[in-house]
Length: 97
Image 1 (cartoon, rainbow, N blue to C red):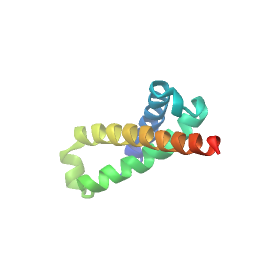
Image 2: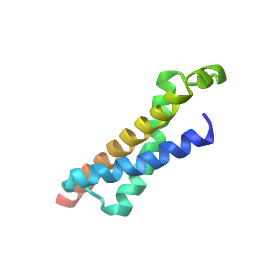
Image 3: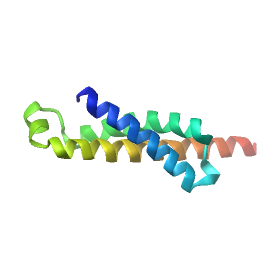
């Protein structure tokens, strides 16, 4: 895991969180909330995806340099969207009580 992959995951997470918030208005946390949840979810989601795909070795990273960026984008964006939705659901349930 290099710092560039982490940065890509965090940015993709923020974009994913805001995109999910725009599509699912009921779960939106506002721009700042969507971004923060997305950044956290992007970091977590990207790390999980990297671990599942076995991106550990330097030779594997060099061989799949193009795929690493796409994997970071996908993992970060999806992770950011999922965490934003989960937090939005929890916020909605707590607001009803």
